[in-house]
Image 1 (tube, rainbow, N blue to C red):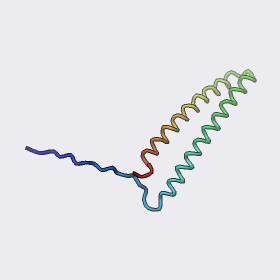
Image 2: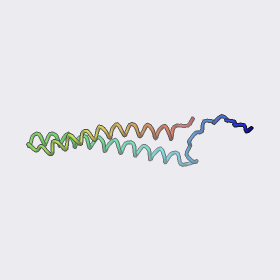
Image 3: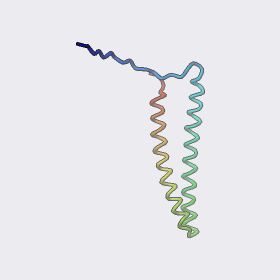
Image 4: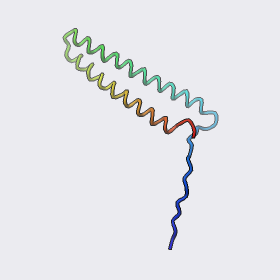
Length: 94
């Protein structure tokens, strides 16, 4: 009768090749702050569209601003989630 053995799987650390770590850190930093800046600017634009739509009696602009604000909140939640997943994959060593 055949025998099945399960060996222990060691913790594998994902590490960048030698000399590349500084560039991956720089790239992650630029992406992190770039996306955060886009989300913040989109939030201000959406609030501005709501204000202009209310003051100028333009219901479509106000509606677009409210929709944009919802999308900004969803993007912020996705940003935090995706960044956390990427950080868990890349990590800081074991």
